[in-house]
Length: 360
Image 1: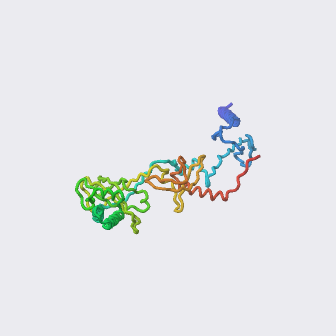
Image 2 (image 1 turned 60 degrees about the horizontal axis):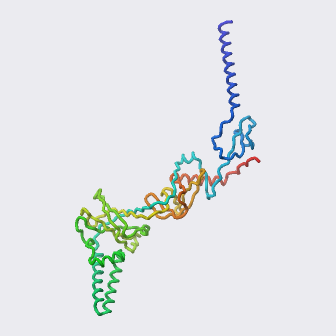
Image 3 (image 1 turned 120 degrees about the vertical axis):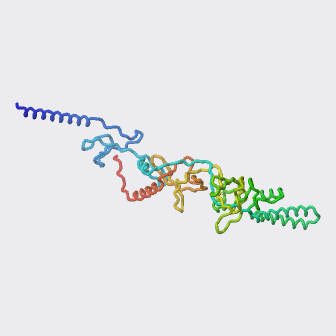
């Protein structure tokens, strides 16, 4: 035998051995039991379906007409009864960037930011003087013998009290003025360092229901960087400005350094503690202009729109008065994409053909 013929015979033997090895591996793969399904065993198997022909099914494990193992078809979780609920896969949630947060009862701090002006109010000063004079006259008239003079003096006291009320003083403040016996000098001029000055700020009509006399306030000025002037709300005008739909709030601030001047404008911050309220993050709310709603996480991948009635709003939180219970999870990120997807799914379902029934 020549050397060339020997090499050809060797290559033929190697090719035959490779072919036999490949056939053996193929047989081993066909005989290997099917891999366990990644789905959990807790889900019910409805039937088995051919991976190549969806119309070929079996109620029990079997092979299809092509000799392939049929795949199990699992029952999906029951859809919740929430109107408009729809399912979003975990992968789709990740793509959209869905995040959730619970509805919780927590302290709600409402912050009102406005602009105030340092003002010396001679009108209020004169009104205080007139009220004190009317009180003195009434005391003298009561001590005299004339009932008519006492009645006239009492009418002056009532008139001066009404004027103070219109200028924003409460009954408690008016009573304290009568006991103190002299008007507030801070309404006319500053006494230097440590003086108490009046800051007049405008608060809009929508915020007035939660503003109370005695609540804290802070003021600052861009011209005085780093300085904060602490104060307290002393009076709230009972009458609204019809042009700005706001009321004037008088804040007594302490000028420890003697830096404030008349007609100086300050940035005012009113921090109002509204107590414990059921709240959610503000970004969870979608506002159509007619209604407000959120998307609630219903479990098993389902989300559902829910109408809510909102209350007070804080910097990052909003009060929920109706529509949610404590502990329910709401979507805080990806809301607009979720809303678009839910509308698209609702439109497609109207044209979607009926799904094939499982074999009996």
